[in-house]
Image 1 (cartoon, rainbow, N blue to C red):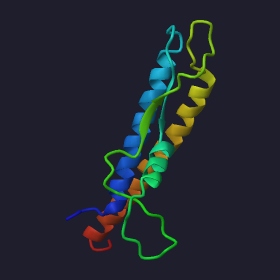
Image 2 (image 1 turned 60 degrees about the vertical axis):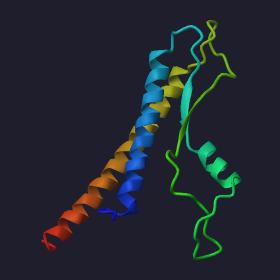
Image 3 (image 1 turned 120 degrees about the horizontal axis):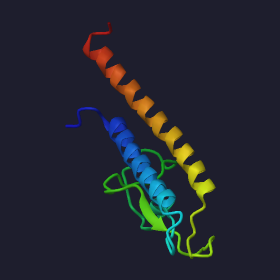
Length: 131
């Protein structure tokens, strides 16, 4: 039995994604001057494309619904960008880009936390009997 339903679990996975993305961005920024370091990124698109290409089947109630598999252990993956070099020392970290990604990720994280707070507030209202 799922106590909170699928929404809170999905929001929790979204927080996991935002945390992993924040860790990757932090590693990139902290290694901006490390010779030979290659930047990392957390991506969702590759996992989605892999799921679609492997013909996963799910029970669909309408032909217009997308097929999906909710049993995936992770909805994201960390990839290393080894195809580029921006600095003379072989490093490919663009600090301006990383700071922009960090700001976008922080906004996303805060939005997810706000949504989780709203869900728990609704549950609290129900538990109290609408008061």
